[in-house]
Image 1 (cartoon, rainbow, N blue to C red):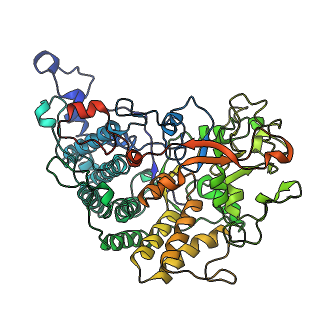
Image 2: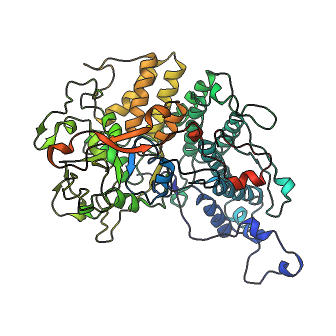
Image 3: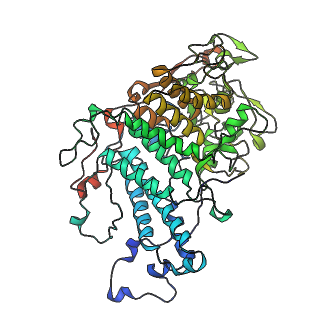
Length: 583
């Protein structure tokens, strides 16, 4: 199988330009055993190591409790422990002076390093002698892609950013030279899109040789562009008059106040460009089992659905935090009832639509709420009464019991118990065994073809005029999931606004726990309706009393939370910066 865009990790730290720009005279003397920055960019190995260091700014999002907030701060999961940073966000204990998950400076460090690389790699004598200009051009395109990616990551978290372009800002620059304003949202989108196009024009469609696995590809650049333009076309950023008062220092609104339907056409074209590469395909297990197919997207390394992944990651820790305490885990990443209810039934209908759904009684000792659900439910959620076999963790499967007095319940769990009566099993490897110190190494998937299909379908449905094409790609996702397609017997085709809603429902399930939901509900302007009290089973009860909905968590929502605040120290030194609304 091909190995697509694995973020390679080389444990060599290259000195940043900031560390090389000071103290002439005495300190300008360089010991004979050290390389100057000029020498770094004349040799192949050191230059490649420098570029590898730029890749390291791509964040590992596997830690969703202390390192990243995109799953635990929305209506997907409860994170069990108040000691982690995500708890502070969910209870509203943050402000510009104590801004949690603050990645602004980190990404700008990555942007600066990428720009320095682009500006200095030309003329590398050793690369030119061994590989020629082609490789230099490819490396520059990789750095250009990474720089655009970092800008996009800033844009999705903080809104309008400061665009620096190809300018190098020296570390010893005067304060006056660092006073730069934020750019309007659409200007940021245009810049990032143009940069991704420029990178895609040079990057190889697939790795040229085995040594190139781990580098950016044309598909990765086009896929990030697809996500970027989908967001830009969405209601929150396309004619959102709620942001009318959010203006730059020149009085220009940061968010365009007039709706532009053609932004959806741009999103259509961007997603279709990825599809037309015909490089990727939806992963399907050889057995044909849809549960194995869905799980394999993340557990089968190098599969052809993956477009952009991070090889170096902490997925072993994800495995530990999601797994049952009795199987060596920590019982801590728990789907809320709202997420459980979002999964379809095996007839392809929502629980509110299907005659198969009931909350009365048991079948084979399993509560009927969990019977006749779609394959993605069983591939993603661990529920009471399920059979669980943790690979090497347990020789024989066990019956899950998360009731109060159960094996994995609250009574004997200390702080390690599910607050909702569920655990995530999506992207949890059965080969990981904390008791024996074993972990399963695999790439962390950042972008995959399933998302692109849903991007394409959503943009088509919103733009209008080709619902049949949108339905085709929506149904490709459902077919792989093992549920009936819209337009089949008992499940009528949908069009217009109903189709948009069906795509949103599918996106919630297909991309669950992959750091999409927070950005989706925000860009759709539905976030206020899904936050607040979130529910689960009653983990304080045993027996049948366990099976009733109770409030398990509360995720506080304020309008200010559309974007994270700029840190106060950034505002203090950046005199032209405008703080995000509500902060």
